[in-house]
Image (tube, rainbow, N blue to C red; front, side, top):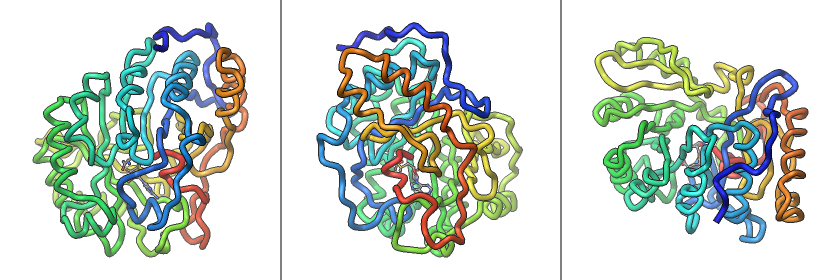
Length: 339
Ligand code: SAM
């Protein structure tokens, strides 16, 4: 059992060369997923062997060190985090850490029917559930293996578990599901939950040209404004989304727009892959490997702490996504870096 008190006493915070404070980590606990979303993965994926993936104990230790360095928000993601065996143990350990304000989760919802209440009990505050279509055939076409009904039951389980907030994440693709923006917003309103539209990003090589399916959030917002009374909200969750409130409802609509609105200037996060690579930016290659430090110094967190502190010097100014380029901006998939 890990102690709940961070061991390292340091006044140092994670501040990068551009003066941005990093207080948010996104930790991918597996590269595996039960879905194969067409914008996220290729049909034929190979996954990492077990010994190249951080153990759950190593994940917990890493989070503890980050929290000792001022990180107050942790998102557990993947791959699909809830398909990892015993993932709940990690949520319980992280949920106990003093100094952590928010433990949150991104999931495809397929396991929520069974796990939502336990996750809530472990201290997960908010939950993002990826849903790209409410049409079972289209849902299958996008996810390749997913079952919409199961995910809808997962959403109901999450509602019953009373998370502080539930938000749908949707990637619209031209000619695939871009006719569903209204239906998805209506669903969110009916369910009294939020929804964010994420512009498709050129991460990894997929079976279509990103440019051919790209839907700009500028377009989606305009479309939605023709049907709903939307009020720009000043609320933000410290992230890249711009929010709009739907008048007379409890629903907020977020837009995460790496192309039409570059959000890097206020970036407060870093990402850790399931093999312990600390990526300083979703859209760049700058990284350091933490796994050797975890494994060579099992009882000493200082080398790990020093490496994390020094990584701030290489956090890039921002991504440079360009859909017109034939090759992806970065070769790794979102499921590798952790969405
Ligand atoms: N399996 C979980 C899920 O489905 O939410 C967590 C991992 S998934 C990689 C996290 C988020 O990344 C999902 O909302 C997904 O839609 C989004 N995503 C994956 N690839 C993307 C891409 N190329 N562009 C934009 N969003 C992407």
